[in-house]
Each structure stands twice: as C-alpha cells, then as structure tokens.
Picture 1 (cartoon, rainbow, N blue to C red):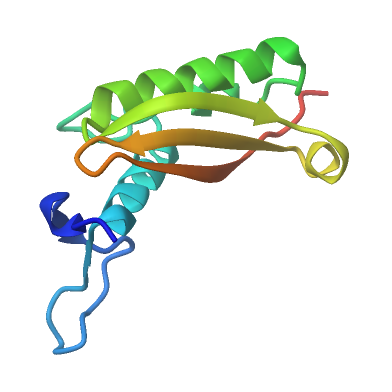
Picture 2 (picture 1 turned 45 degrees about the horizontal axis):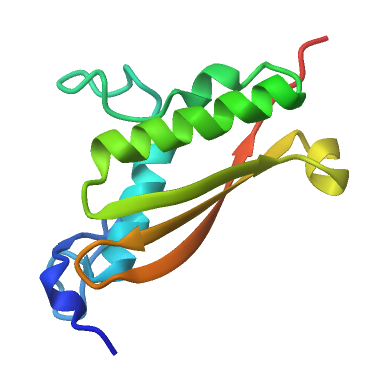
Length: 134
C-alpha cells in the first residue's frame, strides 16, 4: 500500500468533530476526494473572497440534458479540477444522463484521475441535478 501521508490532511467536510473532540480531519486519498467534491459542489462566485473558486457546471442547472449540455458539463468539471486540485492528473471526465438519471433530472459525472504523488488511479462519480426548462 502506498504512503498517503504525503498527500496532506485537512478538515472534514462538512465540518465535524474528531475522536478526541477536536476538529474532524481527513487525510490521504479521502482528503483529495473531499476536495474534489467541494470544488464541484461550489458554484463560481459563491465564495466572496475567492470568486473564481468552484465549477461552472452550476450554470447548466436549467439546461436540458442533451449532448451539448453533457459536453459542457465535462469541460467545466475538467477545467475546475485542473485549476483547483493540483494533487491530481485528470485522465477522463464523462457525463451521462440516461434512464432513471434522466427522469430524475440528474447528470452522473464520472471523473477518472491519478493522484500524482503515489501514482494511484481512482474514479469518482459525482451526481449533479438539473431542472428542465419548460
């Protein structure tokens, strides 16, 4: 097993308490996964002191789930992770919306990435919810 202590450690999200009553911490690859979820879950402009932080995928919230929307979702996710998560190399981003996902107005965004320091390939699937325009 690779040494994940070199990746870093940070507060858990949402913020919680640890075993001894202190701040809850995550480390290693789980810290990176939390970071990716925070980046993708934050709309650009949401953070006052860092307005460019986050992902533009939130601009698609009212768009229909067609090929163009899926392509934009992939592009926005790839751009956000390249900008805000330097510990990974993004290999592929694939957005789909079929069957039950499409009925629920949900995009499933699959991100395949490699953790740079330990050369560990991983995949994270992030659900993003759309509201169809009438």
